[in-house]
Image (cartoon, rainbow, N blue to C red):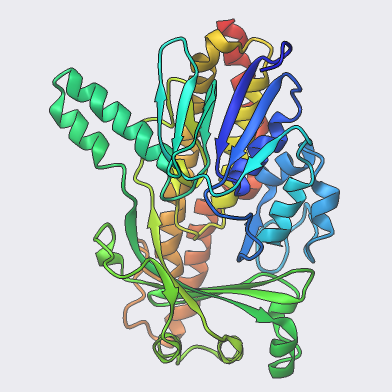
Length: 428
């Protein structure tokens, strides 16, 4: 550690949340950053991601807007657009991650093939990291941005469970241990990338060329939007069995879908959907799992963010955005002048205080959207609906899920930044 270094941060995970954290911390030259990624190389493939106005605020603050606008066909707007109340910025995940990578300082080192096995933190000393290949590292702050199956979350919760056991709080220890493994949402997603030229040959005027579009149906829905500067269409179809939520999914979580079975799920849907389905080749089935609501995102000098902390269903398009918001608030509290090696735990507790309630509320709202989009809405009965009743019911449904979703385009991250700063300054 250099003489001018305030502290060293290790980030596990080089996805959207981890890289955004690194870029945000690069604003503070007295903080050293090292990134550890479990994959043997940084991802060059991936599906699409979407950002609503709140995380786009962060993109602008980090001066990433210009680079990212070159990688998308969608443009930010303050007004409504045909399919969404406010504009959803869509990107191919590798394009987004490459824009972040280009902004990292040369001094930041990225290590691939480094899957964390466990960490050990001792009072007043550095955190020791042990990786599955037997290598070790150390840091003053550990950030777990390592996704749904987070090793950092597993170690953090195991540590908390052990503390509870040491105090003979066996019931609390069992409750904490039960939070370690993700839970199946009862929903499977069928994902594919469709070459735009293939769809254009099938339907040259398809609306998805111009705007993100959703199609709703009983126990299922579809979303499609252009990525890679309009060259590809990101396609995701969801099929839900809500009564199986929180049950165990016994098959592989990700794998090839049976094409005939997949097509049969949506065989009676409208012509626009059939045009998309005709263009889907080799879809992948993803069993959508989530992280159960945690009692804390931090422990001592360790913090988790993004999917590691609050993996949610994709029904509000907010998973990546919430990881970006986590990253920005976390970097704000760590970079604040009042945060020193002696006050790291206090700074992380403020991050937890600000971000955990909001992210978990977004997680629950996304879960509810999944019910609304599949016409399983407690407020409206869609069973055996007469044709003349359908439009009024859909209009009411639109009002219900707009109210549940409007936070994404009517609220700002600015209040959270101000509150974090106020708490830091009041405790210094």
